Image (cartoon, rainbow, N blue to C red; front, side, top):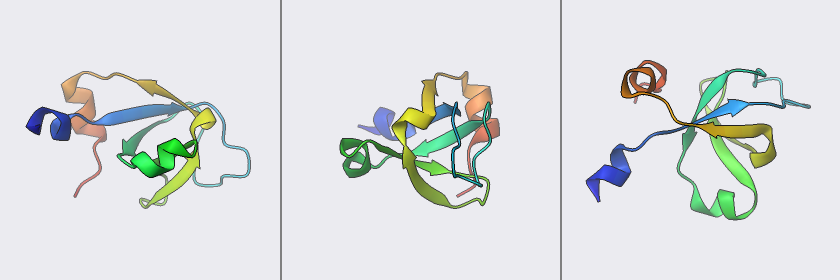
Length: 76
C-alpha cells in the first residue's frame, strides 16, 4: 500500500560502541531491510551519509510529527 511506503522510520541512538559514524542521543533515519531486521540489525543512514547495518540494540524507535520527519529525511 502507498501508506506503508510513505511511512518513514526513525530511531534514537542510545549506544555507539566501536561505531565512529553514530552519535548517541541523535535521531537517525531507518531504511527498510527486512532481512537485516530478522538478524537483529537496522539499516541506518549514519553520519557518513551512507546507510550501514547496526545492531538494533543501539537504537530505540521514535515516532515523529510529519514536519520533523520531513526535516530529518535524507535527500533522495
